[in-house]
Length: 149
Image (cartoon, rainbow, N blue to C red; front, side, top):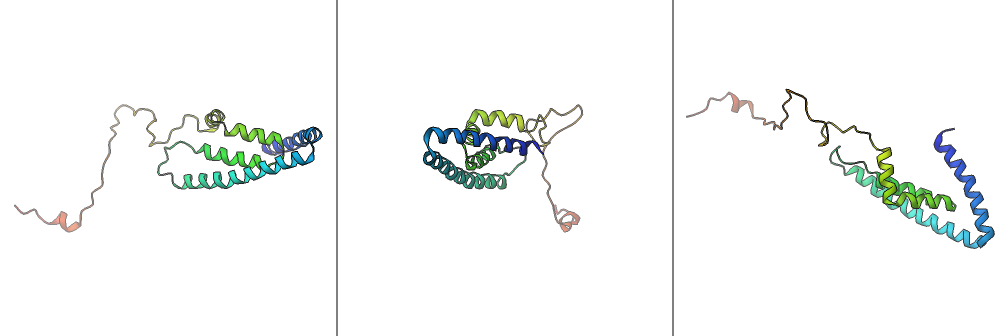
């Protein structure tokens, strides 16, 4: 069983224990309504965050833009909100915090591997001349015809 599958199995059993505790303290109806409300919020976040993430991935013009972890974190938070229970809601709220997002983005992002066209790449080696160029295509007739004085 994979790491993520084990995480969700452990989360499920921990959620059942916390739900039983909160039901004994506050009653079934209050806990049920809170779980239903968090599931509705999660569904909304999945729809909005998932759509925004897909649109922003499609609109990326260059490869040297930073990864779009924020949208992915909103999507995962929405899925965690839809999972019934209070521990998953707590994890979802943690994922929505900007400090947690930046920490996880640094941990999960590419490790010092800038793309070749990145402005943060290493300086060129000796003897390498960098520059920009423009390809100008002229017709064959214009190139073969002699210039008139």
